[in-house]
Image 1 (cartoon, rainbow, N blue to C red):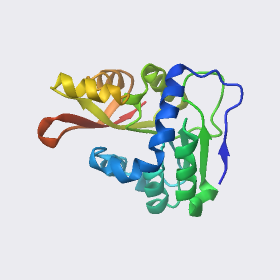
Image 2 (image 1 turned 30 degrees about the vertical axis):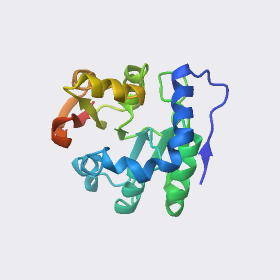
Image 3 (image 1 turned 60 degrees about the vertical axis):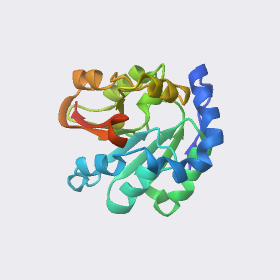
Image 4 (image 1 turned 90 degrees about the vertical axis):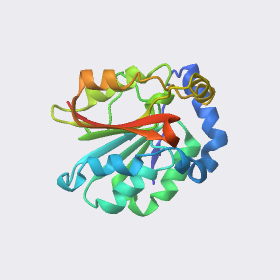
Length: 215
């Protein structure tokens, strides 16, 4: 399976920080993230992909391919693009989706506005526990998503939302996660909400949200 790598891209310290983080955590990702990355299966159900035969789904921050593998398995007529800055995560994802390689493309690069173009226009852009880790840069990623989608295209986001405990927010910050209700206002400003759910995790220690919107 092909993984296209970037050429002559000036990367921010944030990109290097996250890449180094996942250089250590990539092999532990699947074994540990199930315990707190809630809603990943639910966001795919909310998309109602049965109506999107022959469409293209782009996942930004695709990681080890958890979402892409489910999409490939249950929706045989959609094309998939995965973008991530971590070569270790992409290697795991590529191996995981090897049997679907004809309709999956991986890109190793950050997702931000610029002159570079995707190989094909996506019909849906998915962010799954990605945006809260892009600090700074999450607004640029959403701007790029807006530019890449045609009118009527859809964006789907599942991510951390908020926590009433400052100490927990600070601890998540040490793990590169911002958690202070900063995403939903911007999402609702740029995309027409079609689905929005906010759920509590671990008795209210934090909340997470699912958002599906249309450009």
